[in-house]
Length: 65
Image (cartoon, rainbow, N blue to C red; front, side, top):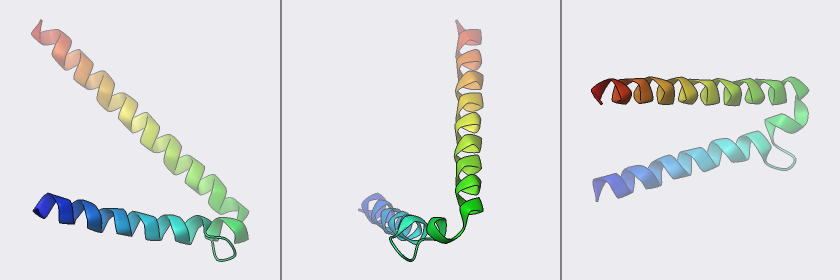
């Protein structure tokens, strides 16, 4: 039950942030072109971090074999 409520709370928070970023008329991305670049860089950083994490996990598991 606790994990369901936690997931629901995070989903609501994420939806609010996404609406604030891209909501029609009020979204930050509509009024500031550099905000798009910032969001793209954040996404790139998340992808690179995930790739590093996967690479480390694969190397760790390969060492066990």
